[in-house]
Length: 87
Image 1 (cartoon, rainbow, N blue to C red):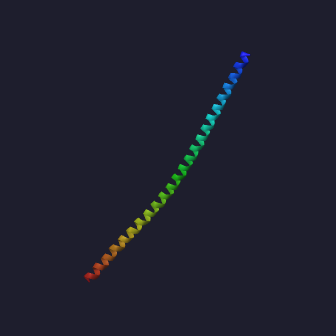
Image 2: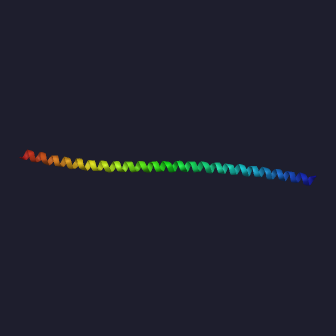
Image 3: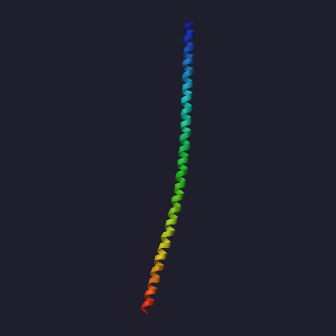
């Protein structure tokens, strides 16, 4: 009888340990799933920022070209104005 009681107690102990292990494993799985979602979100955000950066760099290049053209045009008009006044 004592041996059976000891065996039953050990079975309960193992069962509770298995439950705790299963709970811990589930918690680990859930944490891993959340981390994967977080990283995927961060990667998507990073991709979006990279695209926006490329757009801004293209826009900056276009504006730099427009500024250069406007500067050249302004210098040209200034020369024409000076030539007209001197003539």
